[in-house]
Image (cartoon, rainbow, N blue to C red; front, side):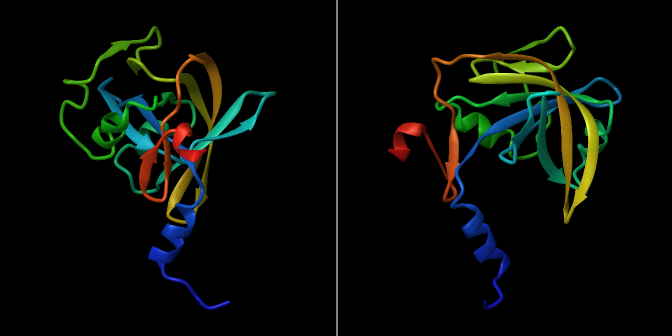
Length: 162
């Protein structure tokens, strides 16, 4: 096989449809942050584990080390703007976002398809990213909603796939 460019690899990866999540965390000063992630994946039912990845040099990485909690929001089909909002770094990220503070102290965005409150149990290096494995502590989901899907560099819903 001929070598490929990073752009070709990105396009190839884009052929795999993924759900879209926003993950919220707290920094050492208890300030809330959120980031859009499409690398979310289930690992195990017993114990209940998930994984996701983050650039190794992300400014948020210290907030996801072992023992730190995060709240994973599976975005609902209508939340494309939310995905784009948290895809870039902003001051006062939650100022215009409907949200509440969960019992854990983590910021919970309103109207998502599912929520997984987790605690990081291990971090592994994977190329230019860290793979974060986290234990699910609490969950909530709404089976009446449709998840937001990302494929071929665009957002879509399940109805777009059939």
